[in-house]
Image 1 (cartoon, helix red, strand yellow):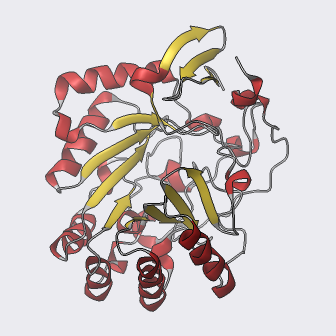
Image 2 (cartoon, helix red, strand yellow; image 1 turned 135 degrees about the horizontal axis):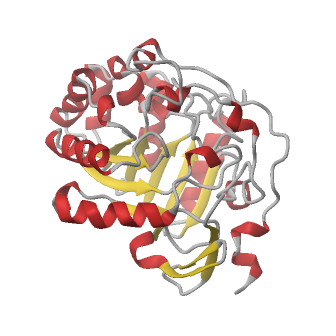
Image 3 (cartoon, helix red, strand yellow; image 1 turned 180 degrees about the vertical axis):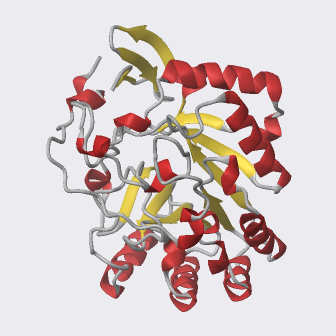
Length: 333
């Protein structure tokens, strides 16, 4: 196995800076206890002492974003799509965040110079067909800034697919207003991708916000993260995915957590995730079933873990990407 494709060869974190704490009043009110050990909502926003522990496999930049930035704020890892970090700000800072090396670090919104460099790069790279807007959370920007950014992207290529990646409908659904929904719905190639991790997040307010987006022509997908103590039980996932489908939101991915510094207490063993997927296939339809996926630096694409696992060694899974390259991912970390 080529060591350059082995994520365990990364520099480990031994003394990371504490990650900022912030939560909206709406999302905090969904927690029935402020003890993260007892409540799946609190676990996502309340800091824990375990965040100060970093395993040898973890790093502050687990996907090697910084090695794939042709311009500031633009990440180009996969051939046909790029990710743009439009702001470092979120309404709520998730404790399982894998991009904490960037988020909440005071770098602010995308500057005019950074945007111009991004647009120039995109104009030189017609192979790019999709642009993901992320951060931070792009919907923390003002409506006018969101509209200007999207318009400038479509001025480069009117055939772009644009994905707005946001937790705003989950943590601050009243931010989804009629004017914002009409802005987003004005672009036929635009999708909204949110992150619902627990069925208690499927509130009436969440459903009203996403229904407004859908009425304005914005299709909505969901990417959940498999989190220990939050959603790693079969009945929880069944309720979550069926609830999303009832809200006309396609469960898109169920992500294995990345090897981000200070997140090992959230990590579910892949064997457990695969067992859950086998049970889910027996219980729910394909419409409600997401892809169980893992992002790895250097891989040709996200890995479907139901097909990528090639072998289980002492302490490691051996994974194969679509190009046939092999990777090692720790079993216990």
